[in-house]
Amino acid sequence: MKKLTITTLGLLSGLAVSSSAFAHPGHSTTASFAEGFLHPLTGLDHLAALILMGVFAATCTKQVATKLVAFVCGALLAGFMIGVEWVHASDAETLVMASLFVLPVSLLAYRFTGAVKMLAMIAMGGFSVCHGLVQGAEAQGALFQYGFGTMVASLSVIVLSLLITKLVEATARSMRVA
Image (tube, rainbow, N blue to C red; front, side, top):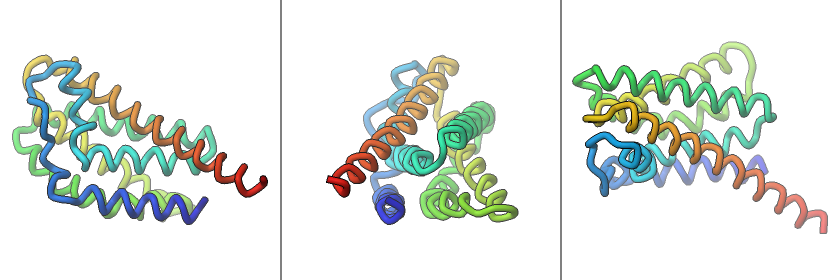
């Protein structure tokens, strides 16, 4: 499973840095719940980062996975709130792109202890803030609904990717036993 997880993390990172990753096509930024919900689902950069978090969380204990998901969602929300007020938040898009390279390394480094684990947590939080920042900067109008939509979609992607990873892992394990 460890090799599958590392391979999945690498493939998702590569996919996410394609030229279409930053386009966010198919929705406007006029704030509504539906537009907010679509935002992280239609930008491959956001989608890949959320899937990476879910795949990684699936390798952790339930308690650690719950804390990790809560931490990421809190950082996304904090970034969103900052992005709503920060005019130049779109400059963070470069950091979002960088997160797709550094995030898999951070997730793997989280397995260590001490300073390495602390640096991994700082990187995960920082990049989650950057993703939220860009979402907040692009929102206009009914900000609460838009922000709530992005959080629901983000949490859904993380949890679904966690559950799918667990299912694939269980299926692979049962196939080896049979």
